[in-house]
Length: 301
Image 1 (cartoon, rainbow, N blue to C red):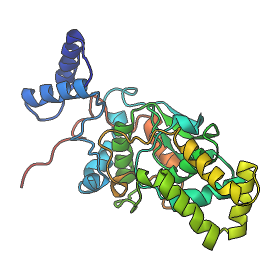
Image 2 (image 1 turned 90 degrees about the horizontal axis):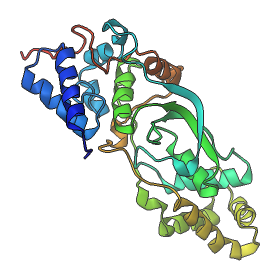
Image 3 (image 1 turned 180 degrees about the vertical axis):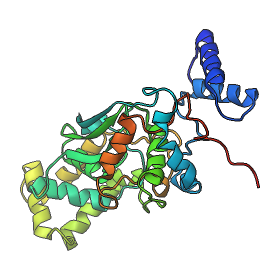
């Protein structure tokens, strides 16, 4: 928990109380201000739920949240800096989900070594200011397996990971009309020596839809600069060593893959451009002051 200067905390509370336009009592306003200051939250978790399924449960509210930022009397308060095509060494970035499979990552890594696909490059997703990638996890981890100094990139958003998930989930529902997340499986445990060795040996024996066993062997020899079977343990050691340079750490409270944002141009044309515009032009009404009635809680029936 952060150490907050008392004067700074008092100022934050005063601003929150002054700017609050919701029908809530003073106690609720103060509690939210204190929670935000102590936990470092930028976004009210009641207004912007962390889970996609919770956002989808009130799609009308999500549509208001992501469209009324310009109607709150302050044209700049909701603007978030977004830098397209920002790049970082793979080792500097962190995941936002645990749903990664060694089979997918190993296949990509072998293809990268063979030159069948580029090593690194644009992930096509968003990156928080605390270095969490929101998408492109398999490409990220595969690049690291081959060369953790290689750069990957995407839209750099000047916003912390947990709160960025909240805003992107609101955009997923309110701007893109996507109500259900992607299923996912896997875990960080798959990127240890045992599972890495098992998957590599499987590919050497059976190949895959995209790789023949002899191509896998060719890749290992190229990767290690060794010939024959001696390349196998050397490649495993190198893969595991490179993975050891990554930080497998998700944002605080990050939900399962099925409740994460879906900013997918294959599902909605130019979805990434739409999301970047909503953030950079202040369309998402996340900051005080809030637009009148935009975030009004529904009356109990």
